[in-house]
Length: 409
Image (cartoon, rainbow, N blue to C red):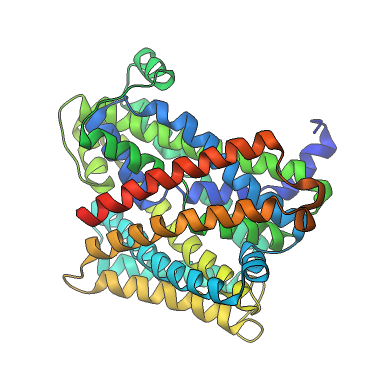
């Protein structure tokens, strides 16, 4: 793809699905994981972000390619090639997992607002209404623009890291030098960092977004750049979250349990501005993800069942799509508002379900993308298949370890 005026305009018309999907990966749970990683182990886990980025690019690119070539969503392709029964079971478990994930996002939103002195009984209803209104009343182009603006707010983590004045030389060495500590906490942290990268819903959402945006095969190279750029940017943000927490909390021996703890702890160590920016980033990530997760769920369930779907529809033309999106947001918000609700249990269960489903989704994807009847000349090359299968095997092993550890906890 040559970089001239025409190609730049083409890229700007295609940009969106890749950057948005990858950035949502840095949700409340992801930010908490990276924060704890930096606070607990300093910079020693930074090197994992390089293979993680490669894995994310490989998986997301395959879904974008399937969407461009076939013009169909991943749920459509699974139903048509593996049957209604398998698809129905897959959708059921995905809905349950995404409900738990949506609860986690509203929990992150509530925590970030509490830092600014706003009660969850005020912030959660307002946040839920905003994300509902955005999708139900907006058009695809309008919603995508808002989501892209939300992606830029992740830059607050980069500023927070610089305000912490970290030792950049030491950080650069740690980034390119793999290191291991053979103790359970370190190994589980590696699994946690990797496990936050690729979630089942992401593959369904990016393919649906590519299809709804109407990206054609002649524009595929621009779409691929969108995917790669999104994957790199999301892990750049993860890098700076780890750096910010490593330079402050780890350096001072402060232990944290979640992203809210990280934001609060930054104030005396890196200044009130670093703390506020970190909290703003958490609020943005939580609300952003609380929009995308129910939206992704509504997409793939409706597509799997053959119902109308899409942001450009309304309650009359796509009732199942709009009611499912509405129901997930309402349930997710209400659960947060229940006094003494078992939030940890809900989040852990959703993590287990996500982990158990991921291997199936990845294998379905690889079978589909190597089917010449579906993909023609756009099947994976032998080299790309090698990378993809290694990625799948590693993700399956790490996911199984994460699931077992979560159950034991």
